[in-house]
Length: 354
Image (cartoon, rainbow, N blue to C red; front, side, top):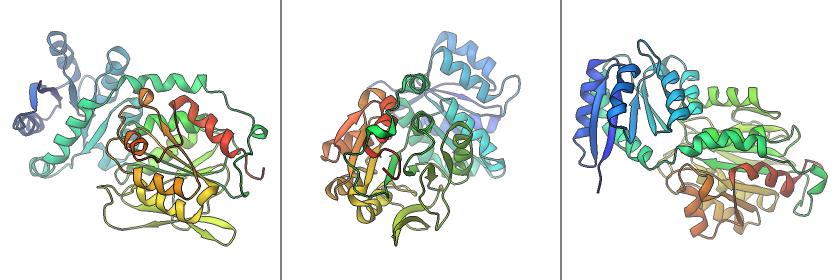
């Protein structure tokens, strides 16, 4: 089996040395080179193009975000961001994800060498996952927003059982871009939406703020006790589980601590199971691009409870892992292209009150 060819770009000599040693110790990985900035990297890439790039953000001569956008526009390549900027504020990291980064490893300002050794498993997993990602889809998703045609709200209604309806969405790798496509295409009046995007703490608030600035609907990070309301999408906070509960005639969310489920917190399965229990046939479950199987079991529970279920199709996924597992388990009514998901939400659930 061909080894994954990795290029490390970081202005810290310590990071270049330690990351290279950690990666090279894995028999599945070959480090092509480790360079101090993107301009040096560009020269080396003319000789041999890497399968995966491990990239810092704050560097001399050219910052990592600018280089990432350049790479994604010229020759889309899986990029793992390894940066300390997430400690200062998550907005820069969200910019990196929006620009096409597959994953982010947050490194501290102090105790860097020990941290990198302690986080070696996360780094190796991120690089291997990145090597399997079809990053060309990260570029293509921007085109879908222009092509989406929303059905008029009055055209829907056959599947409506009550006026209280809920959309539950689960996604992981590639989901930051995919969610942008879906949410930007939704009309201002849309059933309440609950989202689990696998993302670390500190990231989800900035991610929600960015989406809120782009969408007709309101988007924000969920808080414990929030009401699920039309025209509002709530994103589960990183490091917390989010569950739906019924309170009289209204839906609310619980944001709670708890153990990792399917190695994730928030977990899609946790959200989907709670939706199956409390919303049943009044819900629509959607599983999108991502690695692993989180959400597959919960989506099957939703379908068994009478909910409609959708999966993002293989062709439009960055990683066809979570949707594939859900399809194999019989949890999916229909697989659809990313650009069609918003239209299906409107067609199946319509506008609240109809």
